[in-house]
Image (cartoon, rainbow, N blue to C red):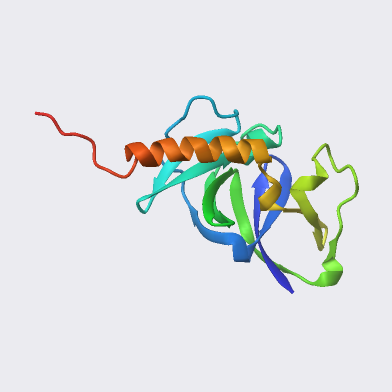
Length: 163
């Protein structure tokens, strides 16, 4: 049995392996950064750490529902990333016979984003490969932007209070 954090984006149901999930939080203040692709919303400060935010709805070409948005903070390698989703559903266990490899084309999603499909009762869950959500070029662009933020100390210090 494997456990997944299951969430919605538009009318689709997705899952991320629970072992990669650090925490699930309500939307935070987002600091936009110039020059990043549209689906990289910017960065946010979570417990003193500056974390990039990926809007999975924009990444997959879906319209935001704006309902009970949540940010799933995940670990990808040594980095933490936030992923913005329309809402959390549940933590779900899937047995090996409830998971299959993805078909070569699945509802317009690139299969490199997927580790497989889960089927529980009548629900299909698209199981995401979070390590492939960003291309190498996007990862480099994001690392360079994050380096500039860390050099300037942005997001980790209190604003200058002038009277």
